[in-house]
Image 1 (cartoon, one colour):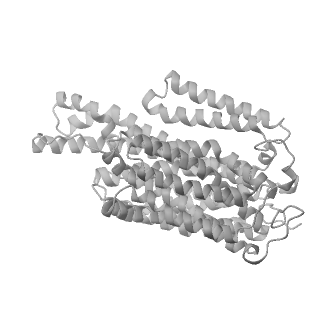
Image 2 (cartoon, one colour):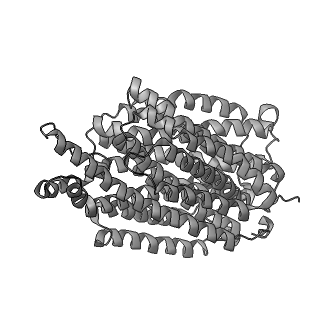
Image 3 (tube, rainbow, N blue to C red):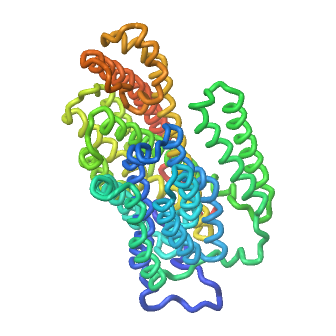
Length: 532
């Protein structure tokens, strides 16, 4: 059986013995790619729209910094807990079926967010949105793994990654226009027409595919529970680390407890007759390291984008549309890098493209260290391009490394593994990098205010506003004299940039370590999947 450069093997579609091969519209893998692209586009657009909508959600619903983090992290937590389950359900009962359920639920939850009327409602429906996204996302890759022959799968993943990048690119622009001219709720209502189109088109063109060999197997309920509990505990501990303190018993207990449960999950899966996540998949170095690099890729991307949007809107004073336009080079570079990364991976393997993408991201982070509170745009767009190129290249190569090195029967699970790494990495990035900013602001705010000319007593009093400063907001009041107000703005923005520089230094160092890991750990000729 032929294999591509990543060692993938299998026929194009796994159907039950009594099923007829797909005919007509459902016989085309390219139409299947278009169909899953609709769902992927909706999820990608939602992610970037939410990042730019957060400041407006905070103002309209009187949400705190912690509330806004939960608007993002409730979604990520729900995704992280259920993505592998979503892929497993698709593998066993039908990838098309669970993809359509995911699209329908995601669309309905999006409309409910706009109707919620409170930050608590937004957070709750974002979690529900995440659960349905967990059914949608892994089955996009599972469907592609099933319908495309090995020699074309790499290019299909490149287009898949490009669609994700295009949706990310359009999100800030479309979202900014809607926020300025309609309201923040409309950015969620936008998913309604996209979701309806996705449902109709997908129902017409997607063939059903599943792992028919698993039909009589017992479902791994214990594995589902252990994985969900472990991931929830780890991500919850990281999210709460900012408010509880990183050395507090609650934070350390949650993270340590989650890690223990995940180790127990791994041990149990090696002994389960029908495991939720077959441990044999990790015999492939490319798959294992691809999973780690995927998590790191979105740790950097979502963490950096979160505070870049705060910087552009709250420090520089740009409107949402103006901020979106200024970050467009990042998204457009990612669009270009995705098919380029897929082509380079097909030819040279992930050992080249994964470290190259990480190095580009490291360069972007280290160049951003030169930003100040009034940095010119000439200092912004070059690192945006480098970051976008790196993210797009890593997305294409690591997705191919993970799903392409898994057997077709485990395509949904591999897609779930890839998506889990992506979402857990994003949750950790948002929480850890924002927490680093908050910690640095807390330790330098009083000194920066004093240095800017704020009287020492007033500077000490303004230390209580460190949470607002960590969001890039200067704690000025209408009754302040103009010179004092200017000094507070200057000192607050300098303290915020101190935090941003700390986060960028950590992010850049992690990128360098990720590049070294990929170079050392990924072999040029991966283990063929027929041995897994």
